[in-house]
View 1 (spheres, helix red, strand yellow):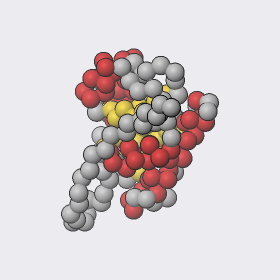
View 2: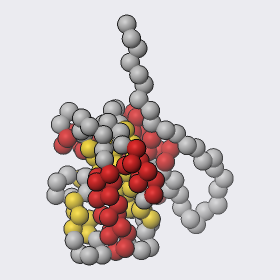
View 3: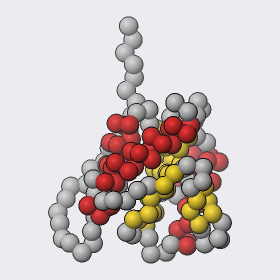
Length: 161
């Protein structure tokens, strides 16, 4: 799978998951090399997958790499999110860095600091489980009771034969 195919996979998964939320019905994520989200600086940031709906802006950076994501990738995404968030003060940001190889220890520490979700995705099912369990979107004008779950995406080790 090429990096572009990986981005398309993630964009399609975000669209499918978003369609299952009443408040996001009909929302279509944007993606690709020409997808731009403008920040307060007026700079148009290239974002692999983005979705703006209601009070939410979803930003997803995809890394189909053979090495772990490092500190620099987290810092770049954090600065992009800060600029975009400053332009949209009345919206909540949901930021994710999706990769095939995970992230370094220092990248994970920075991601926690900047509230960036790090997901290691090898298949569509893994990402669907991870995104559904992390995203908490609901209408504010209704009252409801729900259960909050936490799930972690962990690759299943291959059995040795």
